[in-house]
Length: 338
Image 1 (tube, rainbow, N blue to C red):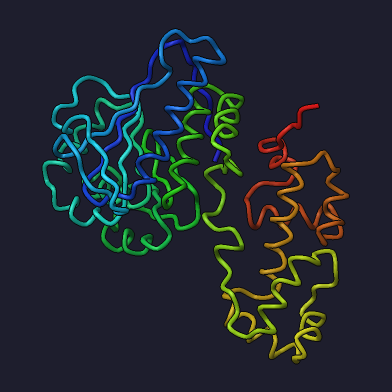
Image 2 (image 1 turned 90 degrees about the horizontal axis):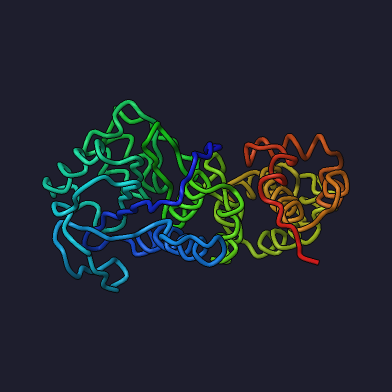
C-alpha cells in the first residue's frame, strides 16, 4: 500500500502511545524510536529549530507499569489527562490486551479520541482495543497473524485481512504483529516528510527492509516449517544454496531418494507448503536482496535466482510481494556510496 506524502511545515507533531500493564514492549518502543530518531535527524541534518516530533506514553494511570517482558516503562500521564489535539495516537498490543479490553474508561477514551486525532493507529493486538471501541466497524484491519481469526470472530463488523503488514482505512491504521509497528511508523514518517527522510531513519535504525503495507507478514523463513526428517532438512538447506539449479519436484525427489508423488506429499506435510511454493519463495527472497543491494540487471538476477526469464520473476514477485521487481527496486534499492 502506498501512502501519499502530505505537505510538511517546520512544526512539531505530537505522537502519543497508549499502553497498559503487560503490553508488548516493542509495540511501544519500536514506533516511538522511529519518531524520536526522526526528530533528532531533522535537527542534525535539516537544521530544524523545533523538534519534528514529540513522543509520550500514556496509560489509564500515570506512572510505572510492567511490560510483558518484565521491564517497566513509565506513562507520562493518564489518558484522561491528555489535552489538546494529537497528530498520531498509537495503541500498543501484547499479553495485557485481554485485561485492557475490560477497562471501560480506557475504551471510552479511545472512542472519543478519534475526534481530535489526525491519525489513529494500532500495533499488533492493539487492534482489539480499537475494535472494542467500535472504531473499526465497517473497515478493513489487520493484527498479529495468530490473532486474526479471533479478531474476525469477536468483531464481525470488521473486515480482517490476515496477510498485510499494515492496513489503512481513512485516518485509521492497523498493523500486524510486533515489529510491524516499526514498518508502520516508517510509512507514517514517509507520509509526513518524504521518502528520503524515512530511508535515512531506517538506515539509522539498521532496518534490513522497509516493507510497504501490502507486503505479506511472512518471509519464507517465518512461514516454512523445518522438516522433521533429516533428509528433507538437508534438502531445504541445499535448495537455498542452489537456486539456479533444476528444482523441479522430480529433481528434488531424486535427491531425497523418494518417488515424486511421495516426496511432494511428505514435503508439503512437514514444511507446510508445496515444494514449488518453497522454491519460489526462496528465489523471490534472493532476488529481492539483489534488487535492494546491487545494480545488477533484472534479466541477470532472474537467471541467477533460477527464474529463467524476467517475466517469470515478475509473476513470482506479484504473487508473493504484490509488486513487480521494477517497482520493488525503485522503492527499496539502497545506493552505495563511492
